[in-house]
Length: 335
Ligand code: GRG
View 1: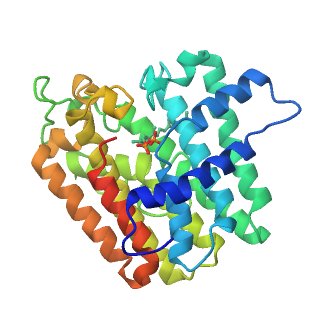
View 2: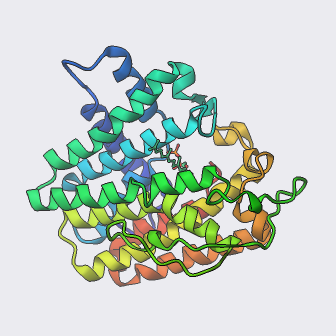
């Protein structure tokens, strides 16, 4: 799987069907699960996403010299969390979207209550899979703790909360309505996203620029799940501290580059290409990288981050070729 000539198509062809089969097998829920709920969970989970996060799990395991099979439960767990977050993110109370992955969003295809429950059910299923299918038990516990922290109040859910407020609930950050460009106001800093340590109060430094605030939101909302995907893949194959640190460095930079690209695609791409509504950020005057830095500088920033991410995994040699290919894809993707 790890070879310098690997393209993203090679990776997707090799890993995609294995990931989909594993997700399919783990959602054949039996007695007690209402048919409509199971259908809604599988509708969203198995719909044609890029599977970037499970691929990161498997590629991280491979970079550390491990096999795919022991990492597959963790790959499924992160994709289930991702699917849950998308279902909830699309709800009327959040982003209020009717299109996702080229199809009707879960609450449109089913109904709002079923969509909420489908997300609610995918979330614990991810942890059940980690708890039951990762060996040894101590590694399973460590994986559950890492994933819980990455998607909880200090990371994914918290980043989403701040993002919905347009940037930490501060009404004063609204930008220029025509351009979507944000002002230069400064904001109180939240550094809790900086580590995977328990969510403890941090003493805030007095001010932070709009860019730092935006980075903080995205490190938590999008980046934390990407980072923990790499971490889980490495943990299940017994990676050492140096490997974990290098992968975390890669994941932190890749996560931010992913979100910058997402912001750029929201400006540049079309609904048909993306399979979801575009242009929403500007309409809602959301704090985004293009709004703060402009298109060119945002592109440059993403490029720089991907190059730094690739440098972070240089020590793995050819075993990390898949991670380098994936990082390049994140930069160049068109959906
Ligand atoms: C309700 C407690 C509670 C929490 C919800 C909704 C939520 C927490 C978090 C949302 C996080 C979120 C939706 C981040 C967006 C990240 C993003 C850019 C997703 C798109 O990822 P891709 O491009 O999608 O990998 P595909 O479809 O390819 O999988």
